Image: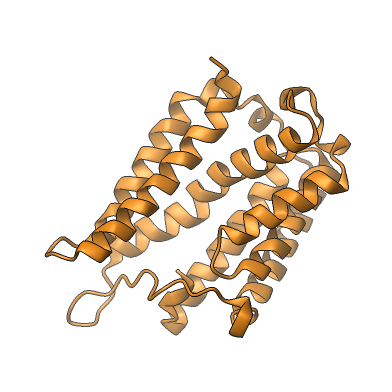
Length: 218
């Protein structure tokens, strides 16, 4: 059993499985409020990450201050691109998105907190462990733990970034985000750099969605 691989793939696979369940529940209809699947999904991912915590040794390496600052700035830039690259063929259509309002129109703050915390704290760690720590290095060489982020070539960066992009309805914005996060990982050889950028993007996006009511971005 390849625990380092499982530790990076299983949390992501569970997250994607919950997305499929949500889509099935939405198509089936019924009285169940599928928005409450999101806290369950995040909880399952957190428990899985905790179970495999011993395999994430690279997360014990603290980044320097400058890479963190650059990561935050790049995360803000990705956010700006994200909300401006949602037109026409750049948008595959993601549906109505996650609307945390109660029937009377007010925000349900329990749903808001779970959504923001999941998007800004859990998803960046889970996805960067899969997309950058695992897949990016695995494309370079299947013995991915032997690959330093600084050794990753352009081919692996491009393939993993395209796959990361098509995971999202805003596929082109997703590709640019993937390229940005992969560049941070390769440049600073530290997974906290892309995690920080990813978390910044998701946090700003969440706050912007709450401010504008553009729920389709969630």
